Image (cartoon, rainbow, N blue to C red):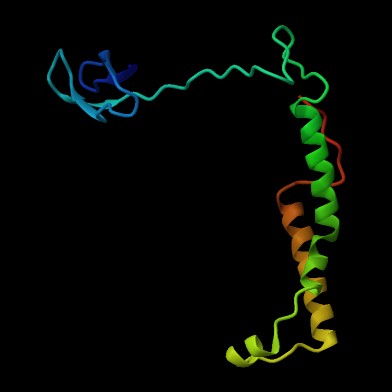
Length: 139
C-alpha cells in the first residue's frame, strides 16, 4: 500500500489515505468540510546507491557515473565535430528519386547543403550556450 495525500483549498487541511500503487483517485472529499480536494503531489527523495557511489562522501568511485559521463561527453564532442558529414554518405536510389519525382543534386548543391548543416549545428550549440570542447568538472 502507498500513502497518498490530498489538500483542501477551503480549510487547508492535509489528509492522507493508503491505496494500492497507482489506484488512488485524483479527487476526494475533505473529511472536515466535504469539499472536493485535489491530490497533493510531493517530491520523493532520491538516494543513489550501488556501484559508483560512496555512502559517506557522495563522490563516485572508479568506474562510476562520473567516469561514464566523461566518456559520453568525449563521444559527443567527436559526433558534434563530424556529425554533419553523415549527410554526405546518404544517396537515395534511382527508384526512390523517380517515385518522388525528384532529381539528383549537383556536387556544388551537395557541398552547399553540407556547409549549411555544419553552420546550423554550430549556431544551435551557440544559442544553447554550449561549448562541446569545454571540459566539465564532475559533480
